[in-house]
Image (cartoon, rainbow over all chains, first blue to last red; front, side, top):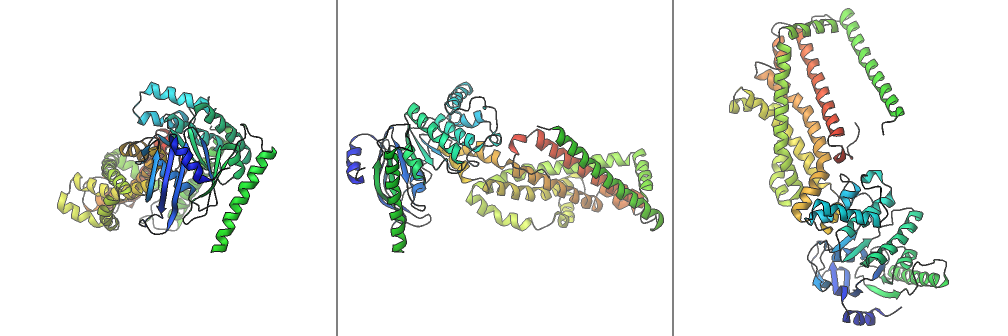
Length: 274
Length: 262
């Protein structure tokens, strides 16, 4: 556990995968200076880090991800990814969506979906196939290459999304509650798989969830966000537990409880303020 | 995936449909034999005889050919114009603002109201009829295409962009394939309205076609010819619709997963 401000100064000294500098975000359709979803948010995420964002709903977690993905633009402050300003969506900032059905291209096979990134990058058919196969194997979908999304279970569809995002060879990957719509068992399996994939690929991962147990299973750092408007990061927890993590471990339970208490306090203080 | 049970249910459905058609024809035979003057409602047998007559002198086949040619050319022409417009309207706010008023105005001007105007403009030949069908087709297909495009989920478009697709690539590789189900359904609906329009057009200004048979039969008081042409029109519509459904299921199956079975 550390104070977010001191953490920030220490992190910016090294190369940050993502850095937010006093970022503010107005509600859509409103100009800067009016009421903000996010306000004065500063944050630095190191290269190769597995970073988790938790917080009550309406805290702007998804907004933060969309700013990094480039599908939305902050109205105040500066956001850098690997030292560069974010200028619209880009294959370097991959995104795995919560929705199981919508993000996949239902007219393409698993191989076609996963090969989409290399294909739009202009790679040859053969190279696309090779890249697709590599990531299909990585997410454990070998043998399902020729299937269409409607022939897959929810968990398999999310594996396709992860493989497809990896195949575009991003520098960092954003996850917007990717397992929230899945059943508990599938979710546990995919959490372990994701840790393995992270360890094998070494990519920077930013993962939004409202499931605190999931946050502590996955993350090296867990940031708790306050409820909006003017949401911000209230605290960042370091989770110094070895992977794979044991959720029956006393240390694990202590972290979960601590974060949970923090979020509950955050939610109830908002109620009192209203 | 077509299991034995599916085939059995399909056969059962087919049997029910056949029985229902047979019952209606029998009822018609009974009504026209015992209750109604056959001058006004000829029996099915008399209609078959009338159709046979028209078939023998060549009128029926040539009329079918002419009417189908007009319908299909107009339908294809109308769709070819409508699909790009619908895509543009669905994708671009500016295009929508520019084109929307016209779409929602002319959409309510029925093609039949324009028959005489089109004859004045394009003559009594094939052109006026094909343009009329194209007109009737175009609005249905445009509206369906545009609504298909605007119904594409933002996640799907964002996913493509986050994978590195440039705007033109998103359009070609996501927008078009994702709106194919709506285009397909729009064309199916437009096909039905093409049949509606062709009958009217051929009654007012034509010397051939199924509508022409229906219209001229009154001069000879050949009600059986009218019935023959009406039934052929219905059958042709039924068959083309089935063919379009078959095409959807076999040729573009991978794109049309979202289209319902009916």
